[in-house]
Amino acid sequence: MGLYKIFHPAIFQGNLKKKNYFEGWFLKHCSQDLGEVLSVIPGIALNSTDPHAFIQVMEGISGATRYISYPLESFHWDRRAFRIQVGPSSFSLEGVNLNINHDLVKLKGRVDYHHPVLYPGTILSPGIMGWYSYVPFMECYHGIVSANHDLSGKLTFNDREIDFSGGKGYIEKDWGSSFPEAWIWVQCNHFSTRDASLFISVAKIPWLGKFFMGFIAFLYLNGKYYRFSTYNQSSISRVSFDRQALTIALKNKLYTLRTRVLKNTSGELKAPQTGNMSRRIKESNDSVVDVTLADRYGHILFQDNGQRAGLEIVEKIFDYL
Image (cartoon, rainbow, N blue to C red):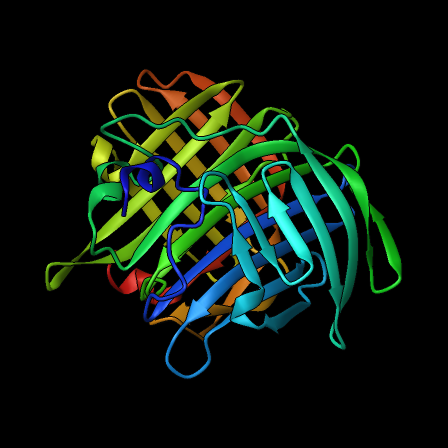
């Protein structure tokens, strides 16, 4: 990995000659009235049997999903910015221009992105993964492209027009060889406080023949990131799951972040295993999350209820926590 790529995780990190490799971007769109949630996931899967580009589409409220394969040569990218193309559809930090005409799904139109909230990087912490961004043998890398942005534009989805103007969007990405064996993922940027965004990921991380339980998380609030992670001396003070509600509490020297997520409708997405999109995972983009941020004295700095939250739980994670 070149230094430019490390400091710009949003851009395409790989190349088409890699073996057993995947890379994908998760772009979530929610209408102003919360009545529509549409996630679009463009990416590539490089393996010996079926290398291809793809676009996954998920309706958050119904949980319906579609996976459309494209020839690998239809994938194009900009070397200096997040700007990719899969077939006739294009994706960037400025917006999406979709032209999917398939037996499974027809999705066309343009949605523009405004005022994206980027994740700050430093020499010691180029992105959400901190100094682990420099480690060349991680199974899976993660990047935050935009924690929160405004939307304008319309899409026609199977002859139904969806107006996303005034809505909210979010973009993150993953790349590497495989998703972790087990993990938890929580994401929400639809609170009564408009300038707020939550992200939590807890995963089993392979490391030098062993493993450790790693986590990365933030609450973005009114221009400030409150960060909790394995590498900044934070800890998981509580985690539990009762089949319907997930509770996670994180703390560092200054703050405590408490979340409770109520699981709603889920859909099945394809996920990578050594570059093959052979794994199946359940994802909800219709969950509800209660969030509380407090300082070390217990004073509440933020308390809100988030709608249309993203949630993934691979329950084997609880064998290790």
